Length: 388
Image 1 (cartoon, rainbow, N blue to C red):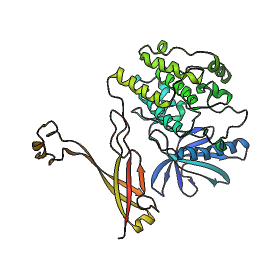
Image 2 (tube, rainbow, N blue to C red):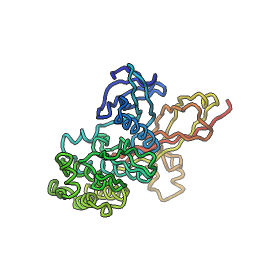
Image 3 (cartoon, helix red, strand yellow):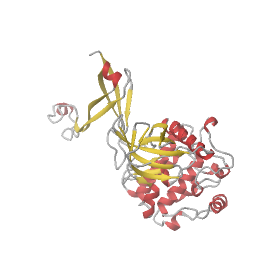
Image 4 (cartoon, rainbow, N blue to C red):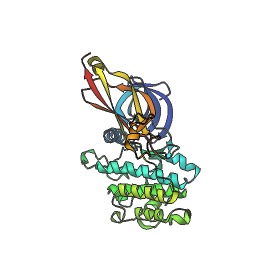
């Protein structure tokens, strides 16, 4: 593969942005809807291992494509194409800003407020996955994309374990996951949501201390996970809050029953710790917004790009503190509405072909801005069709 290659007559590869045992990840352009995407490309050579990788791709498309969450990557498409006589499988995903957490950690440990916020984003993503009956099974820094603000997105659901065993592609005798971050029970092939929490704890430990809880060869790591306690968090990071050290210790319990009950609980404890010790309110996602558009039947059938004005408001400062309702209603600043325009933005909204009356479109992170570094909310657009 090289820059300029067009996969399946649609996705033009622009530049490589990542690589792994599966192949490469490319920044690409999708001309059909005029957007930049990330394309994960795998060379299929017909071997059993290659077949398993293709199955992983298909599974990732099905699993991640069914999850809708601001901290989980969006999967757009999956397919295969022949290029220069070779068959390639590909997975098309949201092009995420930022860098893999593994790259960020090459510079050393994170500031505590950012580490707590990044960890809370990952725990929030795991909450959504676990509620959907899914266990990720490979939480590690390279599967977490981080923006400069610390906002994190979880990627790679290719070895996710679900309740439907028809979709479980684990092969007998093959270690599924990454040994440096694997829970003790996962080493014997047993996975549950609290296995993700153990892996998450290993990542959190690394963000806070700058080093992994266990190191060594794969089988040395297995022994450590099964039998040895890690170093206490505050022996490596003395300024870490005591409740963070306690949480990390609970997450790394060898027995899953001794770990916190849910990722949601972990997320809440991280946010509370950040607020208590670092003064600022924890980052929060902005509220979702709703709007409507009217289309002609031709536009609904063929698709269209519609300019959509989005307006956010704030409390009117001139009358917010007035106790006299009559005076507030007479306010000339807000014309008695009690609020004024805070921001107006115009988005070019692409309406897909074949849209139906009353159907809603979700536009990620086009809603109201987040607070204290949090991600924006989403914009939900309801489509109405008129006979023009």
